[in-house]
Image 1 (cartoon, rainbow, N blue to C red):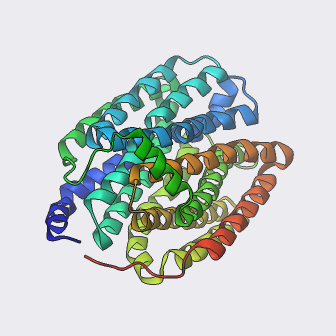
Image 2: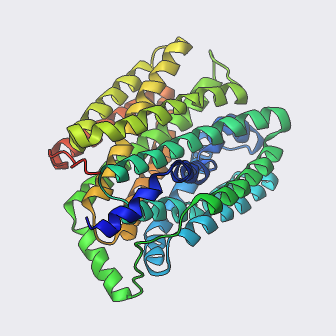
Length: 400
């Protein structure tokens, strides 16, 4: 790496920048999964079936999957920072409109609109980090961003669950919209302008780059594995809410919100994985993490609630580490068309989330939580096999 790149990268690791990267993750995801803590309430008030209410979670993920590749190409042509900030602002609009939704179809549409804004943060941030940083500093920054994503996923569920108990879910969505606006203002202040971005407005070149990326075996492996990761996360955390709302647990919205405190473990585990991944390699990290996650899933079949919570924690941590490893792997291995690569990855990744919400909903309808766990274990086995067969054994060079 040139000295110019090194000098440009160093200031980006100041505390303000790292905090801003975490905020990007928080405000990208604070809305995405928030409804999981109030699904039983929404299902009752909107007279929805189990599959319909599961698809309300999946709608946002489907929109992300559809929009991600195009956002990547748009960002390659017109820039990073302004698109990230605009997307965080835009997320507030459908969130506010959810306050007036009166049908499950309306819920699906507005959740879909939320998802259209998310790739402007997720896809573009990965490209931004890949351009501005290198080596171990890139890994550290990416894991900080991933910690923010995890924290955002927790805060969305936690805050909406408690707000719904105190004020009702309609007023709660209004407050959530205000939080997104505040987040956008903070990001304007803390996100530096790109120094290494070079615009590519040649559509033919973008198509050529897209073709190369589609043939890139590293990206193919990452996309396939990412599909299984979000399939599992969405399937597990969507339907464990319904499971715990039923007998013998009978959890209300606040109690379900408390369950999602397990996400805070990911805020600790993911940065630590950023130090382990360069040493033992992505492949070994993923194999170990998915194995632990599968053990956690099996333990959720026990009835005592404390065992279920511990088991969910173990399973979630394994998936968080896996996702962090995949993101570092993409940033390390893919050096051309980073926005398009991120877009392709997120398209497949969020397709997995939509599939998880839908298929695990069918499994839950068929055999309750036991059916969902069986579906998730099968998905873990697929992910483990993909990592074993297609991830390279080499470690990542831990350069400063």
